[in-house]
Length: 316
Image (tube, rainbow, N blue to C red; front, side):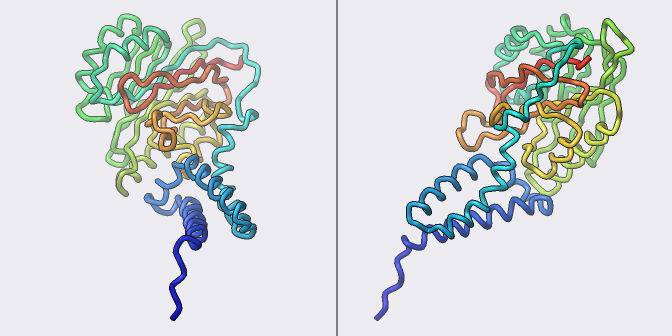
């Protein structure tokens, strides 16, 4: 009587099959919202695949190892702009600049004083805060003394925001429609010393892709932001986009805009405290008119997100 083969020798084959199917699923992310969610976790995939590769090589399964390398490559290509030093923008810049702080404070977070202290310490010229409800609006009301220009969108829930600026805002519009679900702001700012030097800032916090409907709303918001890149006007985008750079929904934005995080390592901004599941869904992007300098991630101050801080300078 033959005994069934033990499971243990089959485990490397099962793991390899799982890795191949997972990579295939990420490559099909543009076709279904649930597959798209799988695209966001490239770093843990890459680390897991590398561990499996070591095991396969130790077992002298060279052909299986070669297949795994093929499955690993898409994840490495996705991660490369974060780690490749050449991806960082090193163009010379001689124009004036300003500091931007973008932060999803988390509406249920009550550590108002820490966020207030962060803003005072960093002294940004332009601030875009997300998840601003009425409690947060009241807690940060005294900031208006140092920021004479503002676009508030206070509301219950997680989709209010506050745009504060020392730079004059000459025009602003809050965009909201059933298609996008959550509001986003587009503002025109004029440089104080040279009012003819204007630029566009867009701040957004689209819905998380927790359902097919929310994924459509998020993607609609990202497409609306993409339309802004067609203009010749200098542009800066910032916010919690609920989307990583690894997603097919985000990729079109990077064709004409530069990522602040490029070349600076893996910059998880949501659940940053988790070594594997923290992901970069908060972003600062800029058109070629700008150099993003001193890009960094600040303390989370009680939020599930971490703030982004960057010095942004005109090239000339």
